[in-house]
Image (cartoon, rainbow, N blue to C red; front, top):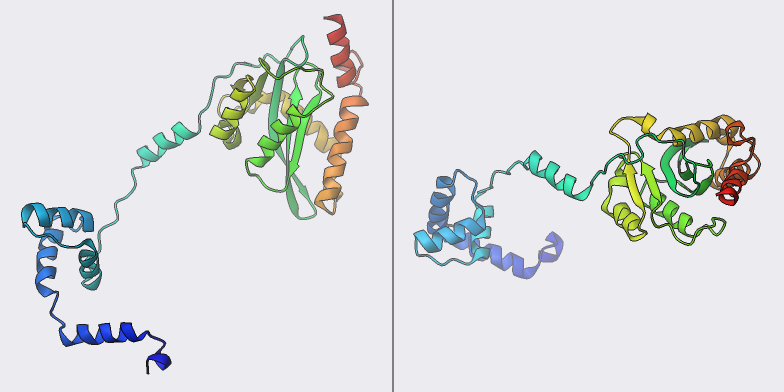
Length: 274
């Protein structure tokens, strides 16, 4: 019968033993319920165990208390989490910083002030995310990463590509300002820690003010006007298209405001005349 009922033999005999003495827990239950009701049904087994010892001078095993509470449906009311505590915790984990750039987009020295952001790219019923770091002075894209998800890897990978960019005439990234919005990625402890480890200076736009990061908005606008990314069939095809455009943008797209030079040409020109 145990095999047919798919129950263990020990479980069956335990049930049989309890059924022979249905009131064996009744006295302990009455004591526990008295404490439970006095606590307005908000006391868990730990509080009940302490009150049994301190107020009733009864030492009861916690497993027995839990079993009796379950048996007689003494369920504790769930306490609603304090929203202000959640807000405080979030502020400790995700921190913003001052707008040190303050819309000073006219920079005279390259490789001193970077800006960064993420944009969405819809293609063939799919969605990709393009993270870019741009030099405000020369307009050069110094690092980028394309991802099919919006995890922290998209910004951390962009920073890693920045560190590994052998085309930049940089000994280190120390003292370079990097400006972003107040998005989740840029306020995260992981990102902040990485920026500090590189001795970079972090700056953020004011909340809900996209104009504070206008250079990135401008680049993404040009990208979406110039690139037929919606026609891509696969993520690999899109990635290749992004790579080709950024190569073109940096090295072959002449810009009137850069003395009719490409971003890389203008960067080298400024470094030579510095």
